Length: 434
Image 1: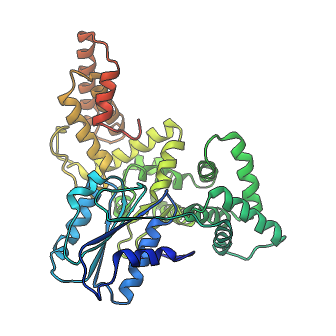
Image 2: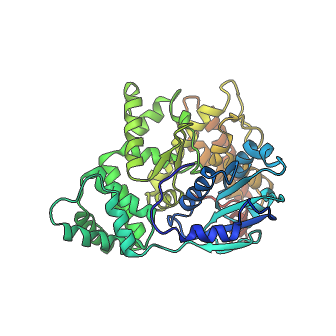
Image 3: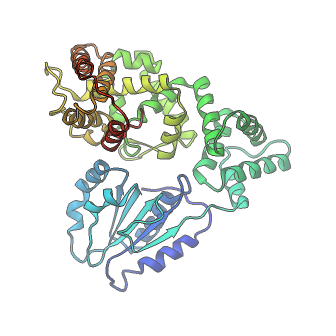
């Protein structure tokens, strides 16, 4: 993994002090880079291990996506054999770890291991030492923002520099947001002073943080200038942010999915590439140069899910599920086994968690359907609505019938479903789009 680096490198010295050097063999050492979303934790980790690899301090650098059990499992499938190499010089990076519980099964200890973790958590029980990644100072932010512009500042330089400083202070030292602001300026030909005024006007009507205001501005602009890009991003919101397969969107797309994206079949490649180009310019997603797969910044997806109107989010979910149904469910399968095998492609299994989520949700509510028949029915109804876009609607009809049976059971029982049921449901099924 490679990326550009800008700003103070004092955190590199801190990493060196904790991890030590392979010139002097040492016991296992681990360090966590902690900080808020968009502060640059992953960039720091990537730049650090790249620099060490270039100086032959490590023979192997392994990058593990740590958002979920599935992403960890997928990463370890590729590197498990390497981790058994004795007395070799390697370093392991767990990126975006959400909890100590998810990390625990994959916490590998070896005599010469070096491990870096990036996380929003202030502490993880497995880690020896934590390093807080602090925000940049406003002057560094301003310099970075101006350096990202495609062309030299035109007109009143002092006014533009002051606008850059105002934006930098509002965004509180988050490189990702500064990249995004520069992307807005580059993509739409805006001056920084125009962006600053736009931010001030929008912040009056939009409650929330400065970052939320910026994302509102960005999504509104996309909705006007490139609806295909916004809808494509919305569909990606229901996949893990790392390594979304490009092939998912390349071939065998249904007419209904292309219609949703607003793409004519004979213009698919041109429109799709244009949407990806705009999203990359805005620092919303990036693309692996080797595999062509996409990864979306998790902070972006969270803002998108929070900010999109419910009907838009529902449409994105419907189309994402219909797309995956078409890709991964065998066409000759007559009856969908809701709590059994979903016949997913091995290549993309880990990239369809919301599809997997339905399977797990239905399994849970099946076991607790006496306590939560309404939630059980809702799962079936959502699946029915999503699969209704598939040309063969037999799966949609079956899901609807299952949901109706659940509701009839609830009416017969006549029970009062209060806080206990909600607590049970929230414990088992944390549905992000609910």
